[in-house]
Amino acid sequence: MFGSIAFTQAKSGIENYNQLGRGNEYIWMPVVHYEAKKGMYAELRYNYEDLKTFSFYAGKTYAGETDLKHSITPMAGYCIGKFTGLSLAVNAEAEWKDLYVSTQTQFSMATKKEAANFFFSWSEAGYNVSQVFFAGLAIQYTRQQGANDMQPGLLAGLNLKNISIPFYLFSPFQKGRYMVLGFVYEYHLKRKTNNGLHLE
Image (cartoon, rainbow, N blue to C red):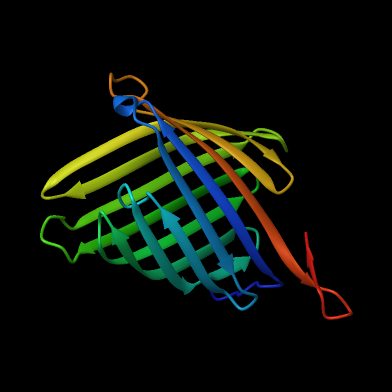
């Protein structure tokens, strides 16, 4: 499926997610990623695996651009903070016309006795209603210490050139509902004829 590798330039991005509603606790989750021209990938997260936890991931992206645009990025990572341990993760996405699906999946192994291993997945499917507006469904799934926690959600957002603003409402029909507001900025690095770098 990923035999067609399509890389033209390096790119980087900043993601900023803000969670509010569950127990009225505010959680800030920034993510910074970089993808080199040949697909080498790095990602830095905070408050993602657990509160007050930094995590760093490295891997490689395999992508293709036919009628179905698609990419998969297997990664290995290390977490330090409230949760300390090792992670194996995969980011994958596909887009066909105005439809898209994406998933972030990981298995994290704790190296401290007070923490537990866990499996986590955040997946979503959406439709680009117009060049600016998109909507869809999302789901988060966590398995830890034999317990399953599945949280379905609604998704809507705006695309403004290289800026995306998604809004999620998880468990919308339950008392434990909560919101996540994101801000995603992505830019490409192009080389100038004078060997400088140009941000797009």
